[in-house]
Length: 177
Ligand SMILES: CC(C)(COP(=O)(O)OP(=O)(O)OC[C@H]1O[C@@H](n2cnc3c(N)ncnc32)[C@H](O)[C@@H]1OP(=O)(O)O)[C@@H](O)C(=O)NCCC(=O)NCCS
Image 1 (cartoon, rainbow, N blue to C red):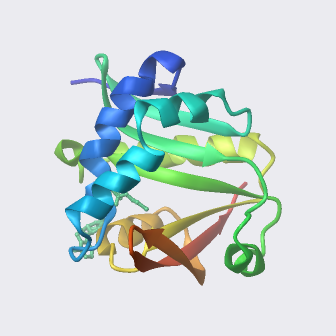
Image 2 (tube, helix red, strand yellow):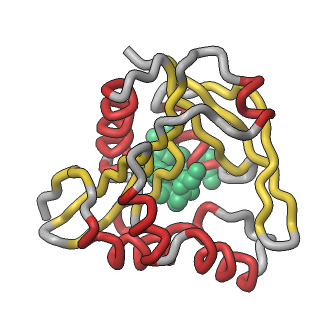
């Protein structure tokens, strides 16, 4: 099956929420409760939320489109980091956040995520970023390895609340050319 990487449109909001429901749990530590994961999906990754992200001028969503089916997405945020732990860790300013990078499990290990990351880094550079940053759960070994392969290095830590649990994220950064 062939695929393309393109900017998402408002028509993608529903499929993006469906993809997020499959992929977000994969980024959570095994100890995460199903109730906390469901609440996070409802509170930040519903179709309505994606409509909001798509209407936000600071946000770009890229999707992997395989013959009309969405198999991955990234969400790129072009505004200064609000979290003080992140802001103090970043050295390459202005920095654009790769806020989400999620690929359907059927497409893991096939190079699609690397293509999505390359397109995301291009978008971040086009937005004027000197650097790109992201947060990744400290237990998400696969994603950390993937980000290291994509040129990111750990520069700090931050906290991420998932329901009643405070999760620990690594803050990773890389230069943009
Ligand atoms: C993160 C993600 C986009 C990476 O895409 P991918 O296609 O899986 O990435 P790749 O296969 O190119 O790279 C993964 C690397 O991790 C390695 N890996 C896999 N499982 C691992 C583990 N348990 N521990 C350490 N490394 C692991 C792989 O061997 C590979 O490294 P290698 O190429 O040196 O062998 C994808 O796995 C994904 O969407 N995961 C679920 C959602 C998620 O966690 N997103 C990130 C949120 S911050």
